[in-house]
Amino acid sequence: MLPIETIISPTDFSRPSEQGLAAAVDLSRQFDAGLVLLHVIAPLPAVTAGVSVPGHHMPTILDELDRESRRLMDRLVQDRVPSDLPCRTQIVRGRPADEIVRLAEEMEAAMIVIASHGASGIDRFLFGSVAERVVHTAANPVLTIKAATD
Image (tube, rainbow, N blue to C red; front, side, top):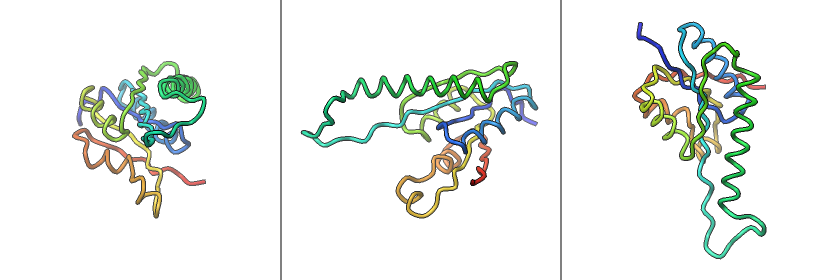
């Protein structure tokens, strides 16, 4: 079996990604591996010239996204990651699938554990699947967790 030292668990703070995190926590315990909990702040949609939202300034919005992501990440770790499990957190900006793959390669992660939201129909057509793109582009092994639907 491969040595499994680092497992990356991407999160978008949704219920399905919590299920992916639970599997990553179990695997981290099983293999005595470190866990990296990763959140990617996706780029904001471009706004055409001359259009603005009164009272909003792009750097301020990005700062707010950073702060809220950090708050949610801290709460997620507190609520879902056992205190005795080595866990690092990372928040980056970029296209989610690209950043997940890049960081997994950079960290030489043994595995990416990612939840699949099970999008279909128009949502899948319009937005695609981050999990699917990670599976197709990552050099690292990827374990997808099919999230239970409510």
